[in-house]
Image 1 (cartoon, rainbow, N blue to C red):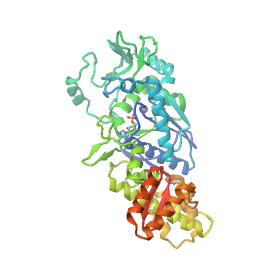
Image 2: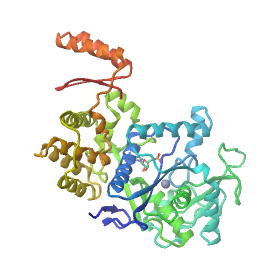
Image 3: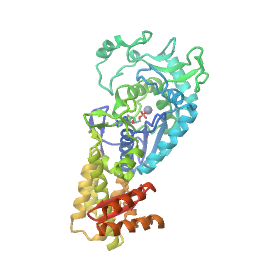
Image 4: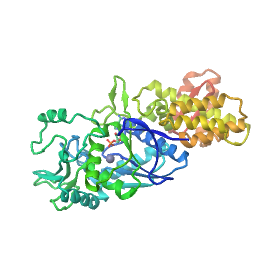
Length: 462
Ligand code: AMP
Ligand code: ZN
């Protein structure tokens, strides 16, 4: 069955055809590791995980590269402001290297908890400086660069079709640029390839280069790393929707200028997670929630956030709210209960071909996961035998990644927690509500989640 994906470049759904089937090269712009990822960032990584799982489900072999931005991402998008890592290091009283290592580990923990498959290759900006310098040298030889007092810039007016991804009105951008603070830039859209360390300041992260000691601009890392690690497999490049106008537009300009060839065939972007009132969740807005705080404050399984993100198509904004999260926790629990009932009835038999086809139709229509969940519920309500339902559901879970296989085996609780849970069960039966609440608090203080529903009480480790 054909796989349709929405390509931001052409602004339509296109039939996906890789350059060298069955291999697919996938590049996901990774996190800037100066702080914890927020659940908006994580929504984007769940989107790219679904994309990857759908490719795998369709029989492709995926070579997936994700970078870690540990240098060069400035606080202002157009090369103004401070390096986020150096700023983070100062405010935490640690080195930029320590900050990067710490938040990289935190990010990896988050994605593990969300069942996001690890990329084939992790790579760091700071480990590929030589490749980035080589790419800038190529651009220099080809006449695309110029020097200012603070660095080497890419001259976007020399690249035809600079706005082909963003479809921006470049004249309007030039107008807006009058308020910009860098008068040395020839065009408002020009961007830094290499920035010098400021005079008299020793940055924690800096390298020698043919142009002077400094550090790479943010965009060049993704061009260098995708070409280095994907080679000819420049199939799909993805990230959040805010990457369209600047980051991905600049990646395309510098890569195509350097190689003279097309850089990636498909560009895919996940919409934002927003908070009530429509505001984007962002670190710079100070309105962000991490996975850890969400799990703890809402008392949910981390996979409930994954399930919550399935309720909205990836190209539509997802509004975050406590009620939606609670509903997702219940929905996930319900699905697990359904799986458990089937597991108690019989071992899985064969996947039902008709329902597999329906599921495939949904996911292959630009990753329509809300529709795929509806197909799963139809299948579970159908006349299929339990063994076939179970096989089909577990097959769907290769894409959904909700760990449904584990629904059957109840988590064995440590004896101490089990004793508290049993005591609470008795207290509830005897309507001793104050005692029941006290026991709940005790269990939670030991790091377990207590959940009451019409099916009874459930205690689990989040
Ligand atoms: P960063 O760590 O800031 O480089 O961002 C990591 C990823 O999260 C990028 O792909 C961003 O486009 C994406 N992103 C940032 N804010 C949001 C948000 N509110 N909702 C969804 N994705 C986001
Ligand atoms: Zn990138």
